Length: 229
Image (cartoon, rainbow, N blue to C red; front, side):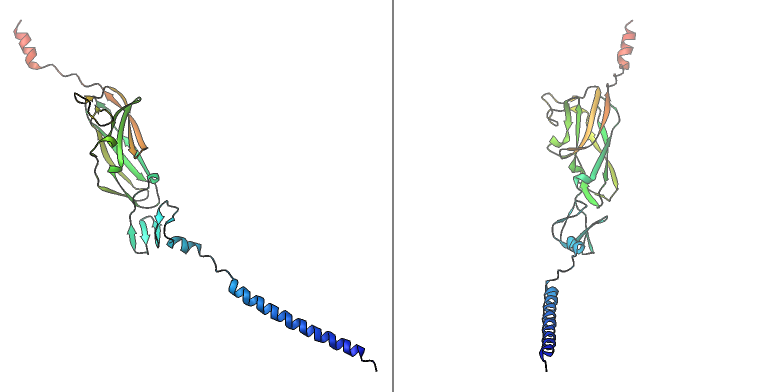
């Protein structure tokens, strides 16, 4: 009786069973290792909101838990802080009408917040510079005492504020120093009136200074000349 075929069949079956057992162990080990090494899902949006010192697309640096909104910087969904306006978000226009030589020139200043966050500013951040050609006539930033109000101005996104700056119509040395003998009235001509914020010009206009009116003759002198004929 030949036993070789039976032994071969039995050996192949045993080998197949061993291979299946080993494959099962390897698969189980890989599954366990994969469960521990799986990366957590990214949470980019919440982390970016709470990250301290994060620079928001609005341009403001957010502290932990803050969010930039149209009403200001919202903290924890309950507290609103109004930040100082970013220079890049503020635009200004200046308008003035012709005045006679020696007369003060009011300059209407209009500020607009073109950012996406409500912010605060003050007229003390803005200065008035007057030039004619290459000659500087006046520069309020060089004055020791600011003539502008320190009242806080609140500007919503797209909001505007209008007020007045003023040049007294006289020519100064170095922008704000009266020369020896006193400041003289600006001569008739064309002048550039610019509004600056720091070193940046944010608005300007060109305006004429007209000749001072000729004083009318005194009536007393005329009557005296007539009486002497």
